[in-house]
Length: 232
Image (cartoon, rainbow, N blue to C red; front, side, top):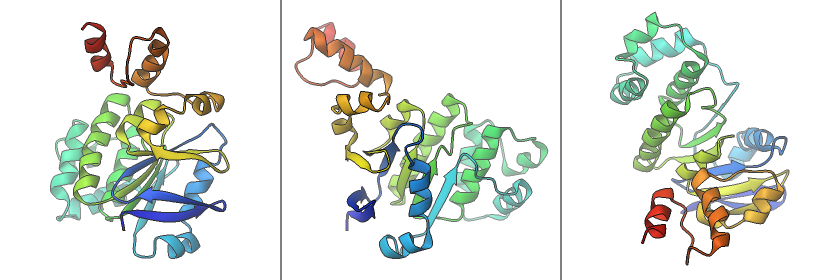
């Protein structure tokens, strides 16, 4: 089966397996409430009976000393743990014991703690909101490759529109599902996106601004390709 079929507010919604699906919606649209419902035991039993699910949100907090000890004791995932830490300039797991973690590093440690539990479905609700943009991009890039290699499914929510570039599918949600489809189809839903006060990634918004000058014969959502096209 290539996808999960789940029921959300009396609507059947397709969530692709082994892909990233981003849930977007205005503030107060019910995204966090939806994620908590998805992780409830009754929902899991009905729609994800064979999967292990973990939810990380901006409020997640696991005891830091416990995380550090478990990371140090973990042999199976040690190489990947140290790879992630090096993205943040930390040379080894043992170095963690001498650091006073920032809010962003706490989110990294929460992520690592979840990672060594080996969930098959990840629900990330603003889980990297305190990590600076440069390091967050590095972490997302690494994790995207990891999810593909290990056939993991990710449901993702973020207030940063640039994160849409990392995902495969988009769900627009405001107390109910208003749209579901590929991110390219989402880029074409200009009226819906602006009516909800949402934002596109910069390159996508730039295309929408320039298309009114009739300079493109087909959609281009990459700034470098736009420049190449305009200079031909």
